[in-house]
Structures are given as structure tokens and as C-alpha cells.
Amino acid sequence: MNAEVAVRHATRRPNLKDHARPALRDIFSARGWPAYRAEQVLGWLYRSDAESIEAMTNVPSAIRESLAAEFDVDALTVEAMQRSVDGTVKLLLGAADGARIEAVLIPEERRNTLCVSTQVGCPLTCDFCATGALGFTRNLTCGEIVDQVLHARRIMAPEAAITNLVFMGMGEPLLNLPNVSEAIRLLTDPKAFAIAPRRVTVSTAGVLPQIAPLLEVAPIHLAVSLHATTDEVRDMLVPLNKRFPLGELLETLRNEPRINRRRPVFFEYTLMEGINDSEEDARRLPGLISGLDAKVNVIPMNPHADAPYRPPAPEVVDRFTEILHRAGVRVTLRRDRGRDIDAACGQLANRAANPDPQSGSAPQG
Ligand code: SAH
Image (cartoon, rainbow, N blue to C red):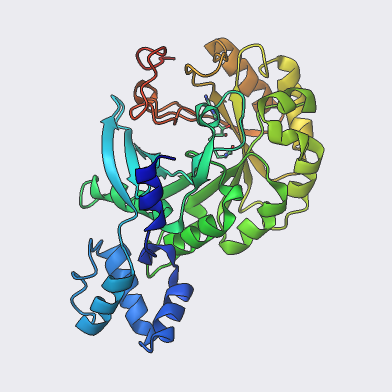
């Protein structure tokens, strides 16, 4: 950390966006202000998208002045934006301490999905993931998580809305559970972002003790990065497997009452040529997850400069999904979006900010 960054970090002020409704009401009542004023402020921040406290005109000026003296409202600023040929947009966002993260907006015919980050870098060092190769800097605050949504909304057409949110950007959400939980409260609060909980998905590499606490926050969907059908292969791809191996992972999910027919667990399975793409793997997978209300998302590896893995040939991908399908597994093949701007799964590594002279142009599939 250089001197300038250290100073800016030390002077970071509390941010209004770090608090969901219950905490904000507490802040207001501690100052002797009526609770409904907190709800007005929430409306300004997340429904009207006020960019300053000054702009909250129906809040008494004494409250506004007192809030402005104590709190910031901006957590992130947009440093760069890239648009893919397929319409996917990647935002490079900067925090007050100079940290940079990315968020990806994926417009589709009937929905707009935003993929948000939860940490600066990631401590999990998954062997095939570009974010993992960055190392870990720090957790994002709640304000920094929800500001990704506000910034994405600002670049959309006025009549468009973010309908789906996936916590699948940089970082491991379940290693930042308090801030991720507070952000989920804001995002699903009808008086704040009002996103339907079933349209929010949080993905984990398998931090088992935090799964139940996460699902207590709101009726959201859980996604689990599976990627292998044996501990031997998963130990190599997802080192966290050494702490929480496959057997314990699946037992935890089987014992979780909040995973059910209405709210199945989504398994992500990134296919890597010669690593986890054999017919044996495809035959083993249905047995592993049997008895679980689950869907499997097959994602051909998005190649990048920091990992040697490649996607299998299309026939191999088709054969893999076909075997799962025949075994009764609900399986979808995820189309890769935004690969030309390094915005696809596992490619988020701030390349725009930190161009890697060895990697040349963006990797193509
Ligand atoms: N840490 C969480 C959230 C990240 S979600 C988790 O592991 O679930 C990002 C998803 O993309 C994860 O399933 C991750 O394993 C997967 N992924 C990482 N690198 C990838 C790559 N190069 N190609 C395809 N998927 C990748």
C-alpha cells in the first residue's frame, strides 16, 4: 500500500449505503429523528438514485446537513466501461482507497442480469480462475456492493431495469458474509432496490459453515461451484475442497431445508479439456447429486492468460451434457457472454487497469 492510498483509506468516512433499513432506522432514532425519515432517505438513494444528500428535498434541511457532515453516499466511481459485441458491458469501478473491481451487465431478451463482485481479488486461489491469480486485497463494503447496481442502472435505458443479480464476480461472497447479507437486505427490500429474492443468486466455492446463515437472510438462490466429481480433481481445481471436501459439501446441501423443489441449488461445472470432461465424470455426477433439488450449469472454460486450461471441443461439451440429461439431471449449457472484453466467468482481473504485457490481446474462445 503506498502512502497516498494509506491516507485515503484512513480518512474513509461512514457511508449511508452501508446500512439496510433496520440499521438505518437505528441510526436515525439514535439521533432523535423519526424512523420514516430513514425510509425517505432509502427511497432517495435507491429508488430515485439521488447522487447527494442535498438532493433529498423532502428531508428537513437540519437532518440533511447533519447527515452530510457525517456520511458519504458515493462508494465507487466508474473508471472505465467496455461493451462487448454481444451487448455485455463491463464496468471497471474504483473505490476511495484506490482498489478496483469489476461488474458485468448482461442484457438478454427478457431480463437484464448484473454480475457483482464481493471482494477485491479473492483468497481462494482456484487454479483456473483469473481473479484467483490476483490474490486477495480486502472485502468490499455493503455500500461498494450496492453501488455496482446503481452504476449499472445509470448506463441502462430509463425504462430498463436490472431484473436478476448474480454474486458471481470477483471474490468469494461467503467469506464476506456480513457485508453481503446487508447488501442482500437492501437489494431485496421493497422500499430500496425491490429485486425479487428468487432472482438473486449467490455463488460459493463451498464455504460450508456460511451456507445456512446466508440462506436465512432472504429466500435467494444458492449456486455452488462444483467443477469436479472426485476429491482428487477438485482438490487441485478448488483448493478449498481440502477443507470442505465433496462428501461434506453434498451432505450439507442435502441437510439444508431451504434447498427444495421451489428453490433448487445451482451447480456450476466449468468444463476443462482433459481435466473434468470425461464420460466417466458425466456418469458419476448424477449419482453425486442424487436426492438434491438441483440444476447443473455447464460452462465451457473461458481461457485466459493465467491458466493453462482450455474448453473441450463442442462435441465433448454436447456429449457431457447429453449424458447428464439422459440421467435425469436438469442441465443447461451457459452461453459465454462478453469473452471479447474479458467479462466472461472467471475472467475478471482488472486487465483494463493492469494490462499484462505478456497476454497480448483478449483471449478468444
Ligand atoms: N467465489 C465464488 C463466486 C465466483 S462465481 C464461487 O467460486 O462460486 C464465478 C464462477 O465462474 C465460479 O463458478 C467459478 O468457478 C467460475 N469460473 C472461474 N474461472 C472460470 C473460467 N476461466 N471459465 C469458466 N468459469 C470460471
